[in-house]
Length: 574
Ligand code: PEP
Ligand code: MG
Image 1 (tube, rainbow, N blue to C red):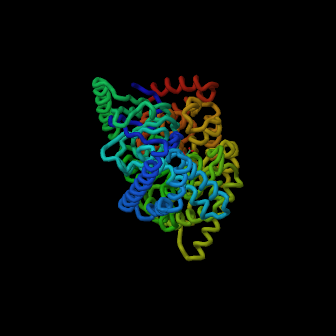
Image 2 (image 1 turned 120 degrees about the vertical axis):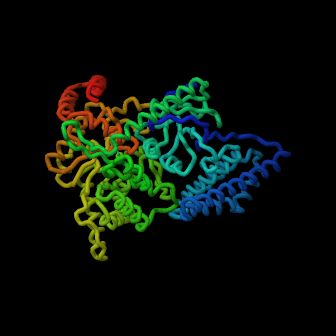
Image 3 (image 1 turned 90 degrees about the vertical axis):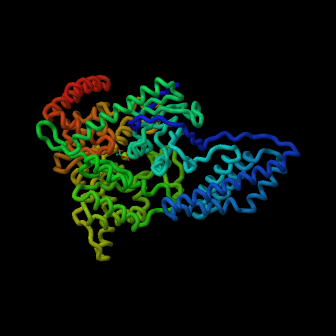
């Protein structure tokens, strides 16, 4: 069976399927007989014990492989499981209502949630997510489902799931996951971006892969074409093995340009840096020939943990990145939580439109405690290399100024404490909201640099959710509106004499490089995986031809025309 989805992370892998159940399982309501009551109570107790063991094992694993702080969150889970009142309530319910344990346990958990919500105390509110989590684990065990985490995986697997959060994906770096496939998702979702960072071939938006696959089915993931083959015939496996081999040869060819400069054939120097999510990616970015880090997404530091990272922890990470990349620049983007990235332990209420909601700089300005801690850590690390600060989701000059006011306060505090930092550290704005692009001329007077975030700029300009596979066909960098906005930002930056780059995924796609060069961009920050391919395009085109091409494209009116024209030119030029 062949399923077509959205290719999000290149490469071909062949392996066995491992199904991760989504949290949205259906819980049946089943009447039980008098003589079945005892057995039901025993079944419930067994599920509690099973969950207990699961949590203890997970704690041990985290202690061993990450650190003890990460495992502390589970102490609260164990306390809930060991609560005698909860067990007694369940036993009485089973006896009285004569219904199956999973159904009654779900009701009980909901009642607890409601009761805790009514208590006006932050501690109880924070415990709600623990109760929910424990509830899901126990119910999953009652239903005989496999657990969500990947720690039981002993051999290399391809994960199949309805969905994966960016934090689930981040955990895969420690596991034996060689590829993944999901029912939902889009190309610029953070889950997809993480897959590329970890170099895990992946296809999303397959709609029914989780229903059509069984554990241990043999799968082929073609992350180049967005295809998944379930239980392929031997000749199909052979064909993909050959393709894999060809890929290896192509890669060896690409490696030949690693040491060569990134410049156009008429001599224009281009800076190609890398986007990273985790400090440990630095080495692979350097290996690919990155001349800097154009976007360090710091929020991954905050995910998959039970409490906020301290200033000291952050300082050490930023210092490591600064030193390792020196003398190259590192653009540290301040915390961009919200959207599709959440911290469970902060208990931020769910929103109807998270991408339009309490996200990124909005969240940081409302939580100066968190923001200041991060800024302080960045400033302290700044003396060890060439760091730059960048605020995400700036929508107006007021917001940029507000963020700078907080930065000034932090600088003053450091001066008072006698702690040195780079006093000339550059501070830039991500241009990823149409209002910022449209007022780039105003912002350019106050920012030291711009970085164009096309992932969000496209979603907000075209009103297309970047993680929704149903409307992925509308998510289109070739839309004339997007090209005009990009041009506006570049022109405004050049007029004010500040530098401008792009860190959105658009510039990790070779087809767009001639156009972007022609529009005046010479700084690209790309997924490390794509770095050499982008360099190859840069080296095979002349700036004058690129300019001419961009001019022609800007005069076209439809996406279709632009795509056709770009493809044709790309074939001729590159
Ligand atoms: C962007 O929006 O283009 C961007 C680079 O930021 P993120 O993908 O993290 O939202
Ligand atoms: Mg963004």
